[in-house]
Amino acid sequence: MQKKRQKPALVLMLALLTVAVILGGCSETESSSTEEKEAKTITLTVVHEDGASKDFSIETEQKMLGAALLDEKLIEGDEGEFGLFVTSVDGEAADSGKQQWWCLTKGGEAVTTGVDSTPVEDGAQYEFTLTTGY
Image (cartoon, rainbow, N blue to C red; front, side, top):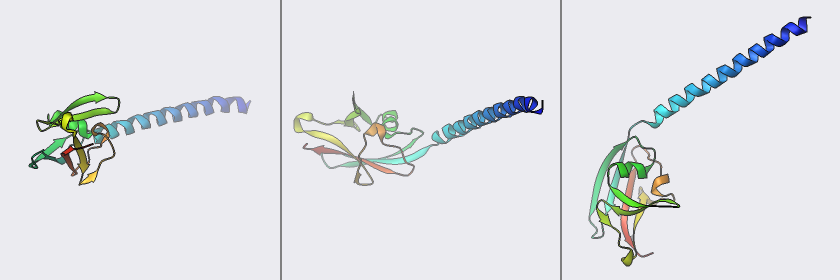
């Protein structure tokens, strides 16, 4: 008879433990989303066809560089299967007839991700350089 009383108590304890784990996970998710909304400051240097460069200081809560630059209206592009293909930066359009394209770098180093999948890192320096030749 003792074993029959232990079974409901054990089931109740397991149910309470499950609820505690679920609620604990929810509060962790909420704090993570709060962290994602922190403002970050980045610098974007745009190097135009004539070699002139212009620096922009940008404060954003966006997670990805493309979204941050679109918010600032600094880039335009075409959506494709690999994300946004940047066609214009700071009002200057790349001329495909001249085989021009916008090269994205970070701290002077090549970026291996597209603008849509490049994370915004607080204090980072990004560059867009109008490049000729494929």
